[in-house]
Every structure is written in C-alpha cells, then in structure tokens.
Length: 124
Length: 124
DNA sequence: TTATTAATGCGACTTTGTTGCAATAAAGAA
DNA sequence: TTCTTTATTGCAACAAAGTCGCATTAATAA
Ligand SMILES: [Mn+2]
Ligand SMILES: [Mn+2]
Ligand SMILES: [Zn+2]
Ligand SMILES: [Zn+2]
Image 1: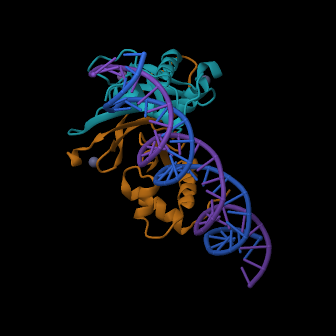
Image 2: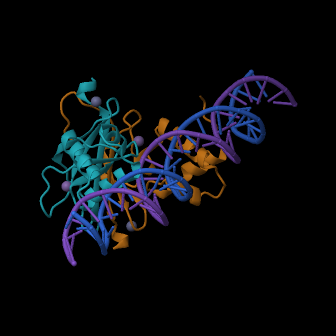
C-alpha cells in the first residue's frame, strides 16, 4: 500500500504540475523525456487520483484527462468546476468558477464532470 | 441527402421517445424488438443528431448517450443542462435547470457536456 | 415497374483503457 | 552493505466503444 518514489511517478507529476491544464495519456507520453508504457501511465494516474493529487475529467471526446489539484482542501477533494476543451489546440483548461447544480431530493452526488468544448481565444 | 423511413429508424426514435432519459447504444439494442447492427444504431443516432432530433451526451463512463429533444426551439438546439447518471441503475437523466458558465472573453462555445454521477433516489 | 441511391449488415479496423504475469527495483530490515 | 519484501513496471493480451469500406437491400419517386 505504500507508495514508492519512481522515475515515472515523478516525471508524470512534474508534467501535470507544469502543464496547468488537464492532459490525457497521449499528451503526457509525448511530453515525457523517459519512455513509459501506456499501462504504466494509466496506473500512475489512477494512483494519483486515489491519493487525490489529481482529478480526472472525461472529455466530450471520450478521453480521460488529468489535472493537478491546486487548491484542494485536505479532506474536501471536490471539483465542481467546468473545463474548456479547445477543439483546435486540444487544450483542456480548468475554469475557475465553481458551479452548483440543483438535484432532486435523495440524489447522492459522487462525481462532477463538466466540459464545454469550442474554440479558445488563442485559436480565434 | 433525403432521409428514408425505415424500421430501424422508427424503432430507435420510438425507444428514445419512450425512455425519457438518455440511452447508450447497448441500452437501445437490448430494448429493440428487431435485430440491428451496432454500426446501424450509431449511424441512425448520428443522423438524428444532425437533424437535431436528439442530443448527445458523453458520460463520465466514456460512453455516448442519446436523448430525445423535448423542448428544443426550431433554430435553437442548445442543451445547457446537466445529466445525472446513476451508477447503480445506469439511468442517465436530463436535469431541468439550464446552467450558465462564465467563460473568458473570446471563447466560442460549441458544445455543452455536463454530467453528474452518483446514486439516484430510486437506488437509495 | 424500374431506376436511383439512402440505409443496412458484416467484417475489419482504430482507439482507449484495463488486466495478468513475470521481471525489476524501491525501501526498510538485518 | 547486503538481504528481503513487495510496489511498480513492461509487455502482451484483452475488452469495449465507435468508425469505416463495401456489397447488398430496400425506400422513394419517376
Ligand atoms: Mn482535488
Ligand atoms: Mn435539442
Ligand atoms: Zn485553443
Ligand atoms: Zn438509479
């Protein structure tokens, strides 16, 4: 159960920290200086999710994106914010504003997955 | 370009109308009384999307769900509402309330994809 | 009835993500 | 340092979702 300090783990975490946006496994692989197997990347990312170091977003392209958690409380690891995916440059940004969605009584929320896609200002 | 009146088309549209929730291809296939190929189902659904008869939601399970459009204007086919996916019964419901997400200047929205997953009231 | 061509079925294919298993290598004990 | 334990990795196999090419079928209109 104890986490070990490996090259892959450090590299992936550094990449996510530096990116300041959510990345999918392909983006991570092409930014990595070391060769890493696809399975390893996914396993590392899923471990990060368990440890609440990153949060996962499923894009409207069906792919999983992972973003480094910047201002998550120790206990409160919730991400009710939207993500903007630019269909031109592929960037998946975390939007700042938190969103509240009214749900019917008795509904238990376990995961929030908000994605808006379109074209970002850099891509006109 | 002209659409033809076929058994598959009618059946799938009827299923979606009756369901009152979003269905994925598997759900449609198991509710269909006629045998239909997977490729056919997807082609029919994508045609429906083009014709704005249904809207597509990508779930946080990575699957595509399709819902019959109930109150879409002739020209205004936008769906800024959330969907609730119950991880117990699999139901993907359209929530009523429309959501507004503030975006930075210059960002162009093309698609809204909001999914909240958890447990619905029927599944305790 | 016949001609046109949209729609279907089938198979092959791509992509994404997961899993089993043997090999590797962190981390702590000796 | 050396040994032991077991978390992590690479590789291959696999599963599932979705797409596409192509020959066949059948809806529509001439
Ligand atoms: Mn977090
Ligand atoms: Mn609509
Ligand atoms: Zn962009
Ligand atoms: Zn339910």
